[in-house]
Length: 72
Image 1 (cartoon, rainbow, N blue to C red):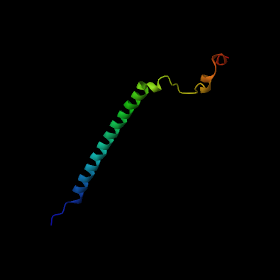
Image 2 (cartoon, rainbow, N blue to C red):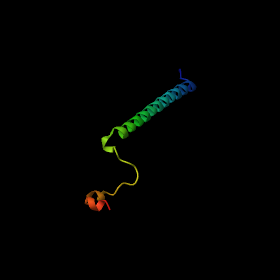
Image 3 (cartoon, rainbow, N blue to C red):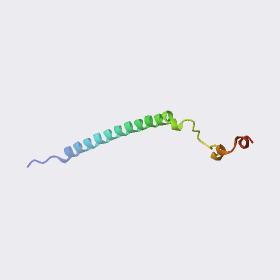
Image 4 (cartoon, rainbow, N blue to C red):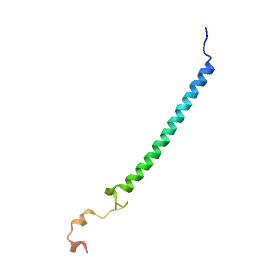
């Protein structure tokens, strides 16, 4: 009866697990880089977001006042 030595099979199994972990880490880095590129494009290229400034905004109801009241 020939049995595989546990140390050899364990070493092969651990080697394959390490390779899988490395490939997974590479894919994660690629996804993160793509996400950053995609986020940059959305902010700069979206015309709906043009002119929006973070922070307190002008009250909307000022847009509906007559011009002579808004000047005061």
